View 1 (tube, rainbow, N blue to C red):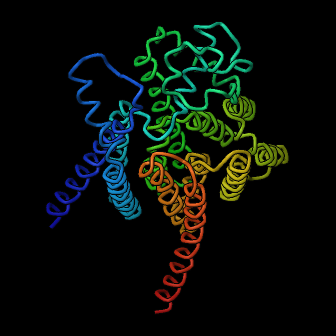
View 2 (cartoon, rainbow, N blue to C red):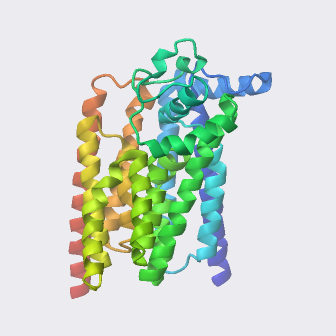
Length: 398
């Protein structure tokens, strides 16, 4: 019986990696029509066949997307179940995480154009020797990147630390698009790994029995995978510094912790919302009192949730905004008020790409559809949570 179970689990792992490969392949259906990744005739034929699905067979493309997302969440639920039952070993979990990161390092940034903006922001310094805080991409109208970029009118909106991290990548890329593109993707993948490593270190200190579960809750969440590894948003790098900062805070190394938090804030500012929580921790340390870490993580998740709301009100809500809440939810472990909302909201947030994939634009009625998806996700997560609580109470009474 044990051998049969092991065989089933092995098939489960293989099925998951196959789904990640499907996501990798699907990403290339979204390559911008104005972008040629390689001049090789064989690659151009392959690229055009993928683009044909993404741009000229949109209902089919949208169906593929939904199918892949559903598979990712089915497998995600399976991994969470195995971790909760202590049937998923740490070594196996890390093998899967590393394989996923390696495969998606080479994925195209299918669901966001932000990566191109990051590349151009650094290029303004390394190639044009100008200040990205005062110059936008539109100031360089002859640059070939403008043919496939979005938001070309905006100046650099992030902190200076992100520039310090990306300028070397721009230099190393020698102004060739494809090497530079993958160097920026590699930074996203490295940030993903670093975040997981330090999340695990924290969990092993505070909740060793739940360490694998917490790692899986964050690392294999489909929203985290897509926004960190496929789209390579800078939020992941911001989180990497934030989680390392939290690790040093755990050791009462407040100077190192503060410095790393400032580096995190210097990437995108959102982790600045953690300052009041950190100040409270510093106060408890000064008074030689024990920090209630569960309450600390709950407060951190709440303030980062507030940061998401502020960012959404400032522009529009984007699915990757939820990334900044996920590490703090993962640190709370196997609690229904953590697992259910993170699972359900991640699913609904990823569905927000569906209208664009189906229609090819963000025009009305898409904005109202996105609002309904966000509201539906929140309501559904609340309903499922209360249904689960009622079920557990009834089961306990029996």
